[in-house]
Image (cartoon, rainbow, N blue to C red; front, side, top):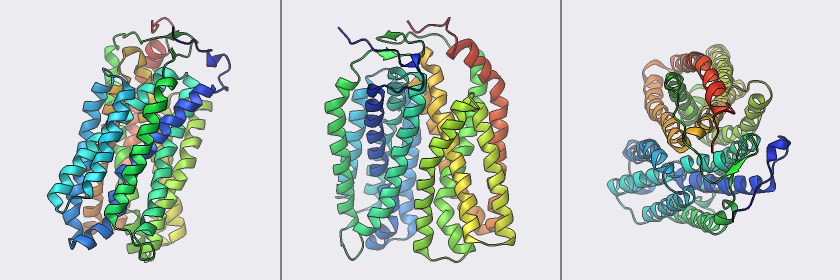
Length: 431
């Protein structure tokens, strides 16, 4: 007989110990994902130097991962609603670790591209089941608490990689980049073992919902047809968000080097600063959502507005002042806003589909849109900066933020109706 769970929403401010444990477990999984996914990109300058290649030669390796990860999100999102999410996370972590180990033996760009594309698919097996686990085992208030902390896992991993990897491959320590890949794989394997051992106990309980009821499996209620209209605009907004979040982050060091003239090492540290600030931004925007703008799509529109303002000030600063401090401040605000939009549209929106039994499916589809935007912008921003200069490129950042704002505002009325008539409607029960 399964254990009964005390309804946590009797006091929404109380987070059950079980919810905290589930959150910690999922955070560790997401931390491992970033450790085994970003490591190659962090060390890429050492890799092409050691292999005697041009930068562009290794770009295909990262492109392979991005494409496989984005497409895999859709496939694994659908699969994630049909299989045990606990087993799916174990399989994803194992495949990612094996891919990192395989990179140790790769000596050609072709082999590295194939292996790293497999790694991209492995990581696409992780986010959809994480969201499904959180949405079905936590109450609404606990879900907000959990999504912020799981997102922290990615930020902490990013900071750790940018600080530790350069140290490990420096002359003082002397490790090869391939050895660092093995260390990352070992980290993933340890976390996979911990997940495999402890998750059955954590997830043996019946699922909990905002009304305090418990049950074994969610019922599936057909979605109202009108919801697909706002979903399309939410997907567009996520593409714009992915373009700004990853595109701006990836090219911030180059922007600072070329416009301000700072040293390479200081420019790379700017990336670490962006990751550190994202930890604060997740908490801040979740608080805004919980206390002020409880419609997550409307909240995303508000955040896009802040982003457009930050990008506009950045444009003026770069055009007239050329200050590293001011540029970094407003770039940081812009990227932080995109992390906030990510939290609203990719972490919180999928939970609203719980009564349809398709949380994982929508989580995968929406997350894939991020990497469509990221893949396009990483290339396009480079071309724009080379052909037209950074001032013109900054104008495109303003346009993308405004486009995201308009997309969210267009989706908000019908999303509000969907929340009222479907996801928040107590008459539609998940029996």
